[in-house]
Image 1: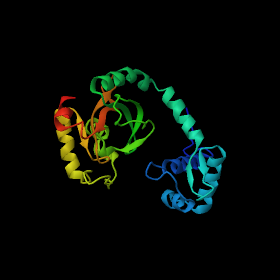
Image 2 (image 1 turned 90 degrees about the vertical axis):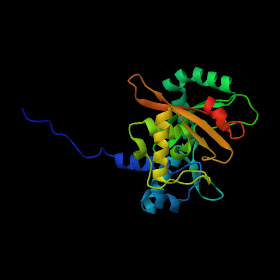
Image 3 (image 1 turned 135 degrees about the horizontal axis):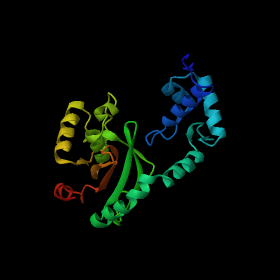
Image 4 (image 1 turned 60 degrees about the vertical axis):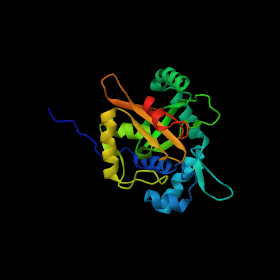
Length: 240
């Protein structure tokens, strides 16, 4: 019997689709709006190709263009898709009662997060009721190396520090930017079973996080309790 012939070439249009997805991933909370020249440079594409892809994405409301600056932003169609994905997420629905319980017991915000590249995406959160509290961040992506959930995921996840790039971006003066120092902290996290951050993501913000495991014991997500540093003191964090 002759072996089956396998077509190893990308399907027609796959390259354009991948390029379009990469353009969308360039937008971050720190870079909500980007110009054509910036997108072209960051994506490593010529301006003609970049412009064609941007027009296609804008036609489907995946992007929208500012009439004032001419820059591009993520569009309403992506928001709708994101909400549909969250609504249909089984992990989110199963974790919701636990988040509510954690928030009620601690009085702080409880979050459920999953990894996306070198960031943690907030899938869900429940506020503990304080007027001054973390909240309103569902759909936000935070740098892994500066969050308790990210550190927990790196410490216990299969990929470890391979998820991180060569440069650890400083977000505050407290952010760990040295790989060796972070690796030492990850060892401590594995020893005690949970991670914490204090003023590393932003000044005045602290969190305690641990991983969520699947039925086979694999790390699938992470959860945290977070709030103002003045309330989440060292002794309080240790008691959570």
